[in-house]
Image 1 (spheres, rainbow, N blue to C red):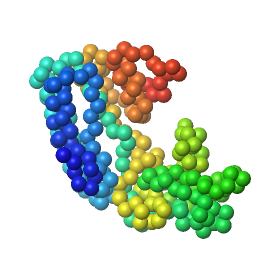
Image 2 (image 1 turned 90 degrees about the horizontal axis):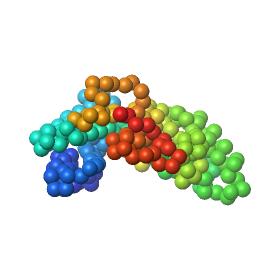
Image 3 (image 1 turned 90 degrees about the vertical axis):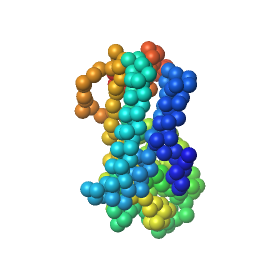
Image 4 (image 1 turned 120 degrees about the horizontal axis):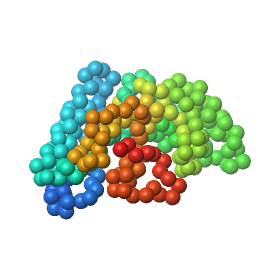
Length: 253
C-alpha cells in the first residue's frame, strides 16, 4: 500500500515485507527504507517549535519497526550472525514562512542574467545553470555568484567541482542558512517547512548493532559519519576488498 500525496509505503508495511523476505529467502544482505520520518519531517509545520509533533510520531513508529526486526532476528536464531546498521541519509531543517530565498527574481532583474539562468531548487540548495551563450559564461557565473552571495538567507555559493560534483550539478551550487529554505522560481514554489540539502542537515545518526562478533558493543564516537561510510562498512563485514581507487568513506566497525 502507498500513502496518498507522498506516494510512499508506510513503515509498518515495509517491515512486514522485510520480515517476509527474510523468512522466504534468508538474504545475506537486505536494504530497508523506512520513509515515514522523511515525509513527516518535510511536512511538519510544528518543526520550528518544541512540539515537533509529526516527526516525533514518525520516529516512534520507526523505532517500533526496527524493534520488530530485531525481535524477529532473535526469535528465529539469526541475531548471532547479524549486523544491523540504522542510519539516516540526511537530517532536516525547518524554516518559517518569512525565511524564504528566491534567487530567480534576483537573476531576472539583472540585465546580463535575465532569462538566461535556470534553477533546480532542492529546498536547502539551489543548483544554478547559465543557459546563455558560452561567450558570456565566465562573466555570467561571476555575476550569479555575486548576486546570490549578497542575498539574505544564502550561506555560501560554490562551484560544483569544489563539492566533488560534476557539471550536471550546474555552474554554481548555493546553500541556504539554517532555518531558511530556497523557493524557486517563485517564493510560493516550495511551501514545505522541512527541507534538506544544505550544511545544517549534514549530521546523521549511525547505529551498528547485532550479535555478530564483528560488532563492537558498547562503544560510541563523536566523529562525524557519512552515508559514504556504508559501503566500506558492508565491505568489511563481508571481507570484500576495496574497489580500485579505494573507498571515499571508511568502515565504522
